[in-house]
Image 1 (cartoon, rainbow, N blue to C red):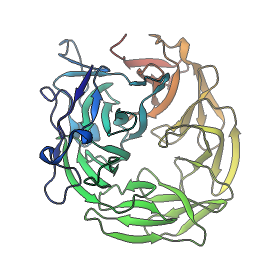
Image 2: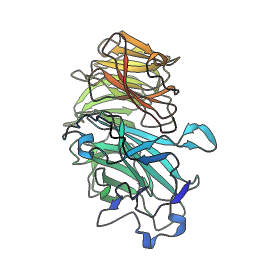
Image 3: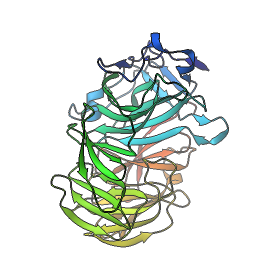
Image 4: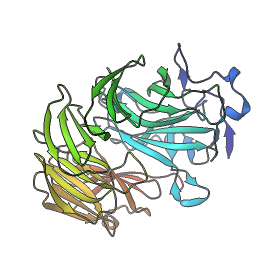
Length: 406
């Protein structure tokens, strides 16, 4: 079923809050100024909104968490990923990200026609209760979706719609609790990468081989310039460190004073996973995922104080650290998931996803952090999200967010 969205209204706006615009210099045109060609056609057939059964026993969300700021929904928002009508094996997921405290996963889904105009659906899933907290449809192409700490705010970059001179590119900040876009600034050129500082004072951006700090008023300040072009970067979850790829090296810096902590003589191809330790260890590898925000390496190296060591070379999906930072989980061939020690890389335990009950028809595609130590989440090929307790010898499945098609 297809519907034409009014410019700033959320899908099923009767049931969910509308996306509203901030005052000031907007790069989103008001409805009165938009033509038919600028409107985004959105397929809502992969969403079902219904009353809760009344039998749910939801755990309390910490008010200091990203999930707690958003709050529990009034309705049961059931979603499964849309698929490309030309390739039913390909989900329309553009990217994913997770809040600093791991309480929320943000799935970003493409909407609109293949040739545009394009829209963006944001699905905020709670990792505590495994439910969708919020769902917004934005009438523009948003990417580099990043949660700002545990504030409930989301930073994003935005591409102009094709074939219209009235539209512009830029960056914005969305209040995910209310759906209001509280800041928006037009940019002449779009950076390759963006990560907000945990405080929200600025975001680091990668532009023309240099790192800048981008402030909410659009002002840019040079942060780091090297002799070699900077190809990619990623800050640690607490933003105290920043890893940079330049030349044939990966370098770890202290983000506060830009002191070089150590250098790794290898290029990870945009795959960074921060572990615990002081200075922090890194997992580096070649990224095979078609989603820029996912960590899906072909080979995986554990880096301690600049010394890389090959862990394995036969991964079949994403890699995530445990909440404690003392272990990490990875998808291996034949639907197997391993837990390994973050300090040594040694095998700790594993399970076959098919042995976990209740069983789901999908195969593991992505792993996500849970907010609790010893837990992680599996996102499968049919859109199910399962929480796994990996603390006992025999792993347990504690809950499932099933796609409503089941």
